[in-house]
Image (cartoon, rainbow, N blue to C red; front, top):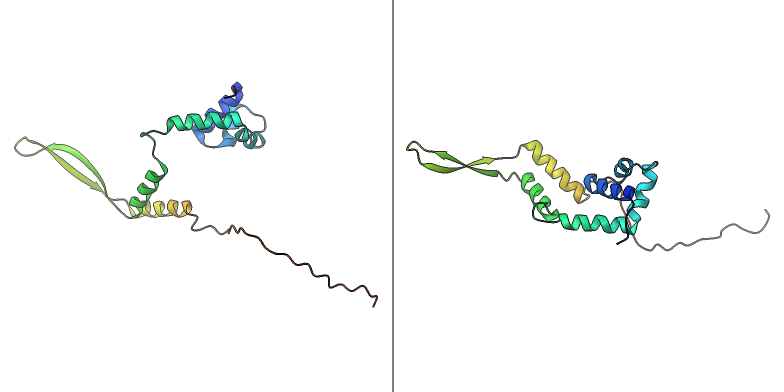
Length: 145
């Protein structure tokens, strides 16, 4: 891997922290963050550094994409979050009890909205791909009338 300059290293670290290239370029000290952000992300050495750091962070403490989608789906469907705690009964015995916390309607709607955005269910712009034949008809006459 190529060696990064201190400024490039700072950009990459801020990008990993924020996920926003323009903000990372600004924090790293670049004079025109908007123009430099895209160029910096295209730099092979920076891209490789970011990928290595992100791969090392990919462990059980960080939610995967599937886990986030499953969580949002369960909130949207109103599945209760169950917490367990220990308490004592009248006789002094320690017993484990459960508490069910149901998501509010507002939280369910927000989860549905986030899922809808993920699947681009409400986008007004349509992306169309394909080959379209173009026919040019020359219907302008050469005669002077």
